[in-house]
Amino acid sequence: MKNLPSIIRIVTVEENINGEIKEYKCLADESNGSTVRYLSKEEALQVFSEVKEYYNKSNYLEINDDLEKKENLDHFVESMNSSYDNFFKLNLNEKYDIPKMTHKFKTFKLNKRKWSCKCEWCGKKISNIEVEGYYSVHQEQISRQYEKACSVECGDLIWKEIIKNWIKSNGYTKFFNV
Ligand SMILES: [Zn+2]
Image (cartoon, rainbow, N blue to C red):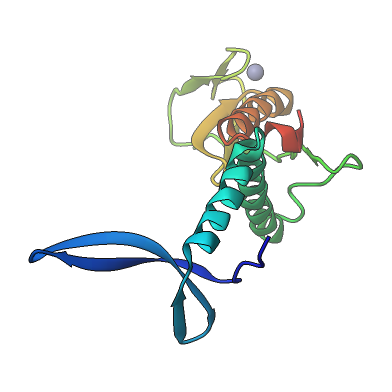
């Protein structure tokens, strides 16, 4: 097999057939900077057979998909960890652990007479007559939702549900210890 040029581009060539312009695509060698050389038929067929061999690999789609997803995730993790103090941690098995969240405690406003809400996890009524406030479960980068919880425990369970959904919907399951 001949060594193929390192930079191959698809170019359009025109042909005038009885005054009608017909366009074709062909391959050109661009490894020599400004000089463009059209590939010979033999070279072009070699390119096609190499491309075909690659695309015929049964796992090629999965490999590419995974690489792209992992790249996106690593990017996201990097930005999250720089703004949220090591939010995502890699476990010894090279997978990320489900990140832990601190839930903000929201104190009820004193001027509100009677106000209540429900814990999104256990369904318990949270009212300003009985308690001082609730826990707000929210992580802007992961989900736009704001969920209310009666306790840290319920908050943690709500958070786990949210982050697991995020992992699943982004196709990140294999990169996490879930
Ligand atoms: Zn609860």
